Length: 228
Image 1 (cartoon, rainbow, N blue to C red):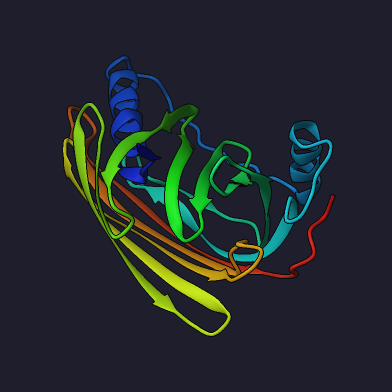
Image 2 (image 1 turned 60 degrees about the vertical axis):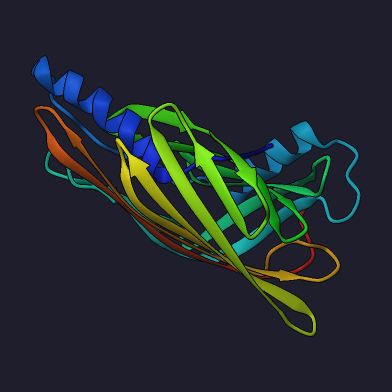
């Protein structure tokens, strides 16, 4: 059983909370704070006191951000440098990426397969954490939550020293849209050299109308040597 979290589901829960708050006439203020490499190191040392390769904190050059368009809209730009905390999982590696204090994704990779993901978003002081349950093969799989269904397809392109993996996820149900994940994974360590994330999801909500969530991010590994 694979578990996969999607921005569309986080949008669904978040928009619902905003709609309820809007109905009570609350005033919204949105803010975001970049998370530092130092903070990532602190997290790593607390969960992995006796690391072995390839465990550690990996630094990535980063571009992009996320946005939502309800209640006047809000955009969070990701810092130019972000960190991924890499620790071992039962079948491979667990990667925690936290570009902002209240925005994170944890992926679990088993080789070139995505075995799980956990995602946190926060806008206007409302935070949501979402996980899907998925079944199927590495190339074709289906993910379900209480209100949404996701059809996933992955394409693997092997190279001499690395594998390019592109996953396309189509979301239907209360939320609808697409999410794509592209990984450039070297043979050996399994720590991605490059990650590209793109999410385009929408949901119709009472009072606030249609809530559109967008995320685009590109992460490029600075060094294959981790910080510890």
